Length: 273
Image: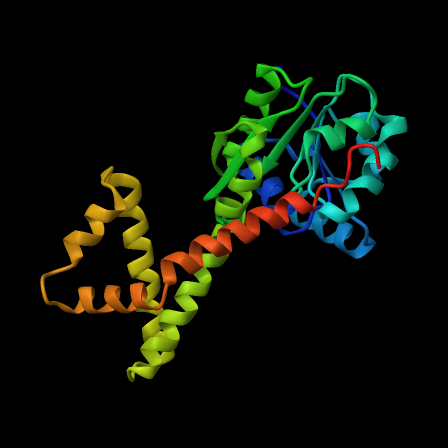
């Protein structure tokens, strides 16, 4: 599936949708090849002014775009698909970026044979550091998956998984940044409790998080080994780790991610509805 002069439409250009749009532009796509759809006219005008792209209706996007990225909320997906279906030729690629929405659900609302790819990006797309998890539907070919990877590589990394693993990936990766923000928030409160000004506590923690992330990514070492390298016998770190274990932080985190997985599963309506 050649990407040359392909028109791409982002339907529902909220934070993630606009991040994808910006990434495509930074990757060299022409604004003339990008379309957006939004509900509010003032939002459409802002996107046109900021990015030089054209805001169109959902029906126009279905008729004219080669690839449609559906970046609406899960509860709005059924209505959007019903609006697109009468106007969508079977050779269009439809990419769903809504949490919990299966390719089977999307396929059931569109003309027979339309290729569908499911993607779960996360909010670091805003800084080109997203992880986007990709699964193909029943009509998606290798070329469709490769084209989807090309689009989402513009805002970070991509990873293909079987669709049966998408809810787990949503819980780990889609929601994952929020867990780190929550941890930074708690650590900042601890820093204030220990007498540090908020801004200094925040700077210390953010740099610790960035440094630890880069070491995890680039060292190839298991996180246990990296943690042990910081943990001296009888030292400060082991005292802190003991308290985390005593308070069941590991078990709480596992339970939280399981809850996110279960919520992702529950977001998909039956395919026939």
